Image (cartoon, rainbow, N blue to C red; front, side, top):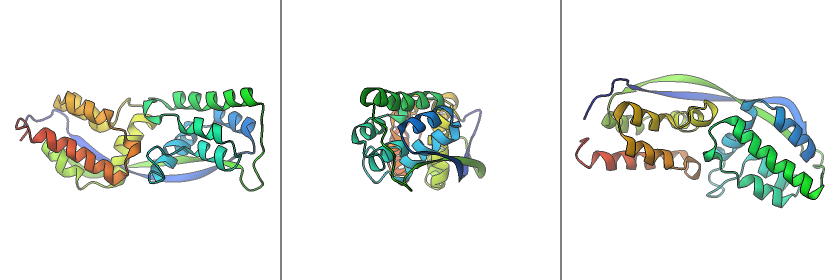
Length: 222
């Protein structure tokens, strides 16, 4: 197998969740906060919620959808917010605009501003991440496969989720390395098409290993 000019360094991350002190009682306040909230807040209430609740359904909702449905009893808006495909967004700004557009259109269409019951206000939180080295460095696809089986789930999440949306690199770190350093365009594309939000983190690891094993088994990278 050809060696890459630049190795892949697996990193991991620790997340710290902080309260912002901001809250919303109705959709008007939610919309106002959405428009001005830091990107770390938008990321927390979409990606963080989705990853933690993957076992709920194949297409779990975001925090905003959950609150609209459970606290405000706005089932239709909850469905509309849950239908937003996070995977198609490359920046937090684009995701923010999509969320705001859904809420704003619903307010204009219905004119309703139901108030959440006391104690069920939406509390805005943000995720602060600390990126840490793992000491795992690989230079070939076979080495990558072996490391992928050992690395922590936090590392996989960092390279698959954080890199694409929060760090706005346009794609997950693995696909970018496959294409730019190994010349593995087909494998990179297959991994890019993989929807990480429909798998548990361990299931995502297994699926990626399957893709790499299939590539290794064809003989050219054995």
